[in-house]
Length: 506
Ligand SMILES: Cc1cc2nc3c(=O)[nH]c(=O)nc-3n(C[C@H](O)[C@H](O)[C@H](O)COP(=O)(O)OP(=O)(O)OC[C@H]3O[C@@H](n4cnc5c(N)ncnc54)[C@H](O)[C@@H]3O)c2cc1C
Image: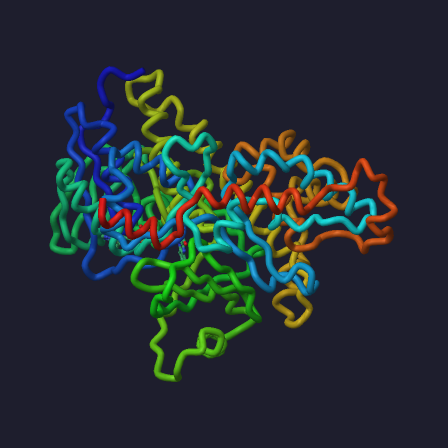
């Protein structure tokens, strides 16, 4: 454990969500040290301006910053998120859509039944193995309820949020400035290195040289320090994840506010629909190898039933990650470190975990310079990237659409050894959770239930040969009982709009 901090001055390059999240976390966690933190952002290079869906870890991040949900939620037009509904990813009419939930403790009651029916379905029995009916979050989303449990309710529920990314960066900026982070608007156009290759200083376009002993690269896809200057090798995921472009637009809110993200498969990718309190954020993520931006925009416009005059925003994305997230005296956080496409809204999870793990690595370093845990940090990060990449890739491998060359290509590549093993285990009707544990995949973001929901929800089963009547009575599961349990549990949760209104009043 360090008694003093090895750094006196930290420069963060970039004022997007990742930059301000890093600034807040470092300032808060190291507030007792004599440390100067400065953030430099360009007014000529914009922020990406998207990133509105999250995973449950963001809740813990705000808690560590000591910021109450109601404070930041109101400032960012935020809503609650129970999970994601995937629509039209399967060509099987029985699996037109399924819900990927954040897990509730109450789901454990019928987890065994869900897992058992999955096994039976593999043995050819016509049993109910679609995940939706077993899961509380799916029911809450269906009823437009909020995933926040009432006071003193004894069962925990994981949940996340949707928010306006630009407003979140502004909110965090205010906090960071209150916590003594300084801010400079300038474009860095030169980086100076020491003899050992580490960064000595950055030089602004007006010629000002700014030195520091540590740098956090939050410069977005440009990856100014980690990629461009230190030239850390890049592992591209482009062979397995085909999407490299997005077209986005905001649309008006509905009368009531959904508490889930919608992910609808289109001809060459998928479209998100994210509810905020004042509007929807919409985007179509697609592969430019299969569709031109103009055709994508036109398809998306028709999908949203918008007029010809609608104005869309186009983005390019690079999928993959740098082999190390922390190299010499540079830590990369956010898009500068890597990006897996936004299908499961995992990017901000990577950003927050990266800075949280970095602080822990430095605090627990056994050398004075703070670097003894650097290799372990980088290994853990790479592992996180590959496990999450496997999960996202599985969405594509498990698709059963035949309508366009894109969807065929999306499932025709060879998966990683680990993903191959998971798929083989599934197709053999054996225990996927056991393999996930053996491969240490479940230590990462997605637990057993997420993997099973994906495979079961997309209907990756052999054709049924036996009717349910052929099943021994003892093995038949009473789906009405489960339905009743889930519906009764959902009664304890407030309507999403009521929960949002209560936030305003509190
Ligand atoms: C289509 C799409 C959808 C996404 N959806 C989600 C989602 O639902 N959930 C999620 O968690 N994430 C999502 N993401 C990712 C998310 O948007 C980013 O992880 C997040 O916004 C953080 O971005 P950033 O701060 O790393 O980079 P940016 O927002 O790009 O910020 C980069 C900053 O660096 C500065 N900069 C760059 N070069 C220089 C320079 N030379 N000098 C000075 N300053 C410089 C810029 O001015 C800017 O301030 C999505 C991404 C894409 C592309």
